Image 1 (cartoon, rainbow, N blue to C red):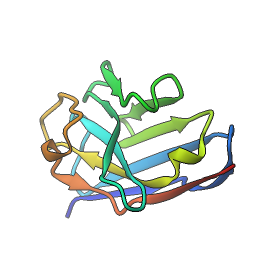
Image 2 (tube, rainbow, N blue to C red; image 1 turned 90 degrees about the horizontal axis):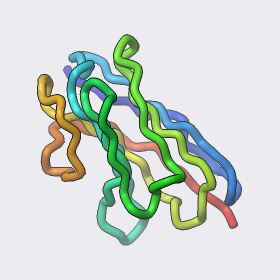
Image 3 (spheres, rainbow, N blue to C red; image 1 turned 90 degrees about the vertical axis):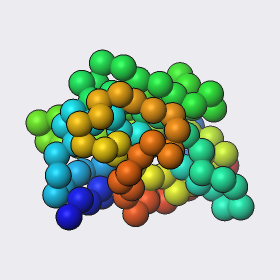
Length: 126
């Protein structure tokens, strides 16, 4: 059974930082593309960041570029999202997603992901 479990969400003031983690179990994602998406109340799910299986390639949504950083530790089967200079508009449920095992390319398209975590709430107060 494949499982992605996010952690690290919480309440933070504007300008602060949070680090989200996504731990994969049940099946290795060590060489699979991974991504982070978010969904705010009343809005569609939005691409945040993605990373290739090796970690050598990354891409970011325009709204988070230069503030967020995605990384991975393949030895621990874990993906991270470092979020700096947080804004109230970053408030959302953040989801970790995994591409099919063996597909190393990153993707900004949520339809290319087969596995999803349950989400972690991030709330940024002004």
